[in-house]
Amino acid sequence: MTSFDAKWQQCAARARQAAPRDESAPFGFATRIAARAFTTQPQSLERVWQHLALRLLAGALGVLLVVAAIEVPHMRDTHPLEPGVADTVAQLVWRL
Figure 1 (tube, one colour):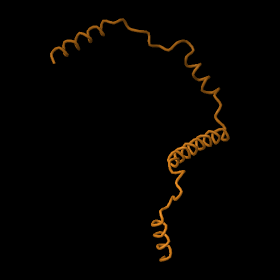
Figure 2 (cartoon, helix red, strand yellow; figure 1 turned 180 degrees about the vertical axis):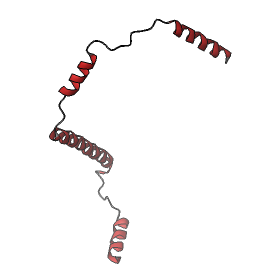
Figure 3 (cartoon, one colour; figure 1 turned 135 degrees about the horizontal axis):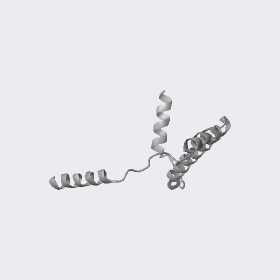
Figure 4 (cartoon, one colour; figure 1 turned 90 degrees about the horizontal axis):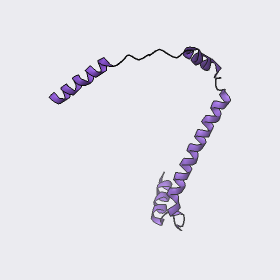
């Protein structure tokens, strides 16, 4: 712990001895920022809807790919539902 304190004091002393830097903004900086803020045109509502539609379309495509990847191993099943399951469902439906 004492080595940390010594190193901290040494670093603080070096920082105090450092030459001050010029921290002012360059000439015309505020003007350039203000000009850039007013030159950017706001997006139209149509452009916003296009972006939203593309994102939703990409999401739906992703969901379809995941579902297709899950179903690929079961594509060659000749009997997707066992007769016991089908009979159970039929019995439950007729009781309702």
